[in-house]
Image (tube, helix red, strand yellow):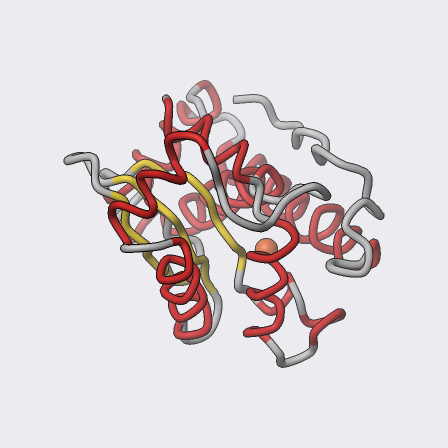
Length: 199
Ligand SMILES: [Fe+2]
């Protein structure tokens, strides 16, 4: 695998008023980078260092001896996916085929947004909220604790919101519901979700 983090897909101050440069600087430059540094140190000189990030995640999942590798590898993957789930031009309702599928599977975009918010608010402690597609094609909202992710549950991730406190505390303190509202109204990158849906 490549041991460098991909660059953020936008400038650190591009989401200002919704997510501050300070938050992004810590979140990407310290938290995300630390997961990558830890992973690199944990798998250095092992067979896993020659595998892709997805292979490392699959091979370390549900293995108590490799929990540290799994946690760091999954958090590297989750954060890269989260940056792409955000856009300075994001938020609002998706269009194209994913918009139609959301209306079909959840009843309406408003119902989807309510359920997505409930899942994020209801995740006890640290974790993630996801829009995923099941193998049978249906869309589903899930929440996962800590580093857990759709990949190891046979689901395709379409969009995610990081609900670890480090994602919002500097800007929203304890107001996780406000942070998730902002994600849905102003930041959710539906073009990215549409591309994942079409894969
Ligand atoms: Fe995070």
